[in-house]
Image 1 (cartoon, one colour):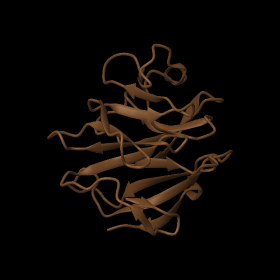
Image 2 (cartoon, one colour):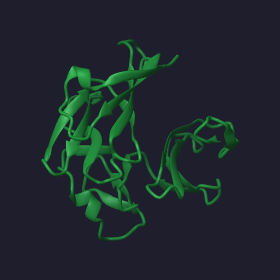
Image 3 (cartoon, one colour):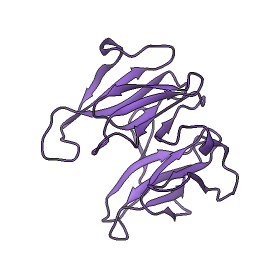
Image 4 (tube, helix red, strand yellow):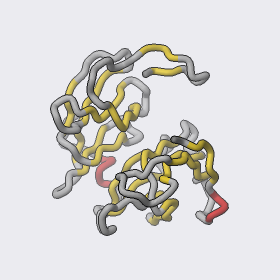
Length: 196
């Protein structure tokens, strides 16, 4: 669904029986990356903002939009590379430590939310990496689906309410972290919305 800020539905972008997850807009808002299971397994696809131009972009791997608009793939083994556009030079891929898997770049390009490859499975710890300081802080023991505000001041993310048998143990709550020039402590992030 494409929604207006007031929650009103503008239109459906997909209308099929498949599960569509992890939708993320490109920095300029022209393309939408999402994770459907239309081929029997979850694979990333792109579409334009009108819902057309649908195409598969990669096998399952960590993908992140860089602030310059490139879509960078982080395979389990090997070097990160530009998935879209498929060009040999991919400056954004070289900006992060090899151990860091980005999930969401801040629009100003100064911070990135993600995970560390070296953490033991299930690797659900959510961190924020500062490119200027070349260091990161952990903001949640278990966090998922991070999204930055357009001014890069806040990071919203999901956090499960307990430890159960499910992958994300819903119900979950949405939290936000005031990232800009704010050191991490337990008072720095606040529960925003309860989910079921």
